[in-house]
Amino acid sequence: MKKIVILKTGDTFPAIAEQLGDFEDWISQGLSVGKENVRVVDVPNGEALPAIETCNGVVIAGSHAMVTGNFSWSVAIEQWIPDVIHSNIPILGICYGHQLLAKAMGGVVDYHARGIEIGTAEIELVQEDTSDMLFKGLPKTFTAHVCHSQTVAKLPYNAIRIAKNLFEPNHAFRIGPSAWGVQFHPEYDNRIMAAYAENMEAEIKESGLILSEILNKIEPTPIALRILKRFGKIVG
Image (cartoon, one colour):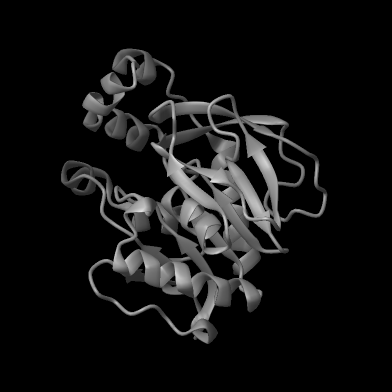
């Protein structure tokens, strides 16, 4: 039976995992397709990438690793991605997955010159595309939770830019009809976002930001979550 494959690319902070779960738990819940239709593959811990024909869809999760680290497991995913896209299997990259998807298809990933973007941010759609299955009909601007210090500095040549904000020029893109990258985290809720900010106070200070201000601005992000649910419907 084909399943939606969630590629695990790392773990959250242990304290967060104990209380709130991990990346794959949040993604699985957000997809709203039922656990029996999801398979988690932990690539950094040695699980083999699945055969393409066993995938109904793919979600590449976030990570505390950096794409520019070129870890062997990450390079393996990078080399596997084009076959998924060329097979027209729906694929969604989130944060680390977004950057890895871009790199795999010829884009450039690097550290963001302004440091970390973290908290609840406003996202702006750059164009109205009525054919886009994930973003069509959404508000021109919406909020999403963000947590990243690397960025897609250059999109692949065949990518369509979908969303941006003042910090991040490439918050979402699409390649072909059914391959998407989103820099923001549609799977995060308010508790997860707050826990991340609290666990990253040192990085926040290094970027010249104030933790209390970030925490005060955290708010629900239902439109971002709708994008993840839509992906589940497309695949399911």
